[in-house]
Image 1 (cartoon, chains in turn orange, purple):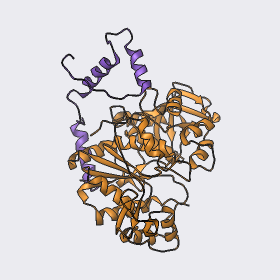
Image 2: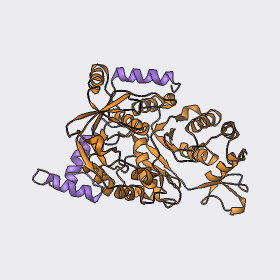
Image 3: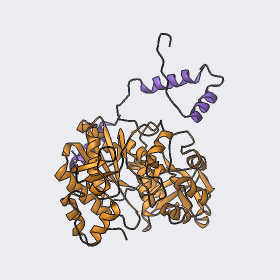
Image 4: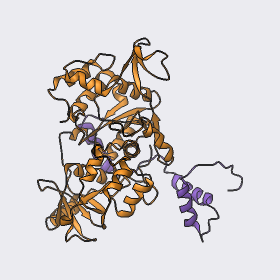
Length: 382
Length: 70
C-alpha cells in the first residue's frame, strides 16, 4: 500500500480533553462563517484525505501551486485549498491569532491558527488552475466570486458534522485498514460524478483483471446544473455492485468535496486523494473532471508525464462504445467496425433519454440502474 | 557502495537543483549519494506497513463492521 502523500497521514482531529478545551475556548474567538463545501474540505484536511496539507495554503505554497503545480517543498499539488475572507471579516485578525470556523447556523467546526493573511489575483488563480478566465467555466465563476483576502494556517477539527451520506464516508485510516483486512495489495481508485453506464463498468472490470480490488469513490458535493443528484449516484452504484460485482472485490465510499472542473489539474488532485485512501492505481478516462470544451479530450492523461513522483499509478482508458456487430463494449483500438454499428456512451444523450422518461437500452445501461433513475421525478441538479 | 550496480531514475530538474543546494558544504559528494542515503533510510524495514494503535484499529474495524464493509 502506498504511503500517504508527503509520507504520513495527517491527523488534525481533536479529541478528549483537548477537544473539550478547544470547544470552550472557541466561544471566545473571533468567528469566520464557512460554507458547507469548506466544512467538508476542513474535514478532508483533518482526516488526512488531503494529506500532506495540514490547513489552508499560505502564500508561498499558494504561489508555488499556481506556478509549479507543487507545494513549496516540491511535493506535487495542483488544486489550491484556500480560505477566503472579506476585508471586513479580516479586520482585527492578525498572524498568530486563533479563529473559530463555524457553520452558517453557528456550529463550531474547527479552530484555525492564522499563520498568514494575504491578497491574491483572481485572474491569475483562474488562469493557472482552470486554464481560462472565461466566466462560463464554473470554477472560474467561483474563483471570481471569492472574497478578497486569503488566510493561511493549520486547522484543528473539533466537530465532525454528520449528513445523509455518513454511512458512505470512510476516512483514509479506515480504507487502509479495510483494504488490508480484505487482503488487497493492489487497489484501483475510480472517480465518478455520474450514475454508472456500461462503459464505466467495463473500465472498472478491465482494471479489476489486473488488481485485487476497486475503490469506487464518487464525488459528493456541489456540482454543476444537469449533473446527477448525489443520492441517485449512490443508489445506482449500490444496485450495480449488488447485481454485477463480486462483493469481495469492490468497495463504494464517497469523497465529499466539490467538483472544481479543473480537468487535468483536478485529475492529479484526484489521484493524490486516492493515494491517501490507500489506492495503488487510479483510473483516468477521457476528459477527466472536464466541463464543456475547455480541455483537450486526453489532457488529463498527458499531464501525468509531468508528475513521475506522484506515488500512484495512473491507468489510462480511451472512450468506449457498444458495437452492435462485435456484440460488446469496445474501443477504437479493439473494434474494426464503423460508426454506423456503434452506440456511444454519451452522457448528454443518456440524460436526454431520462428527461423524456425513456429507459436507456441495455447495451448502454443496466436495467437495475436505469430503473432507479426513472423512479426519481427530477434526477438532476437544478 | 563499491561493488553495487547502478541504475538511473528520473527526478524533476527543479528537485535536483534543490538537492545540489542542500548538500553544499556537507559530506555528501553528489546528489546521487544523498538521494541513495535518503531512500535507504526511508525504505529500511517499514515498507508497506501501516502503524495504527491497537485501540484505533479496533475502533475502525468496529465502525467498518457496523456499516457493513467488513
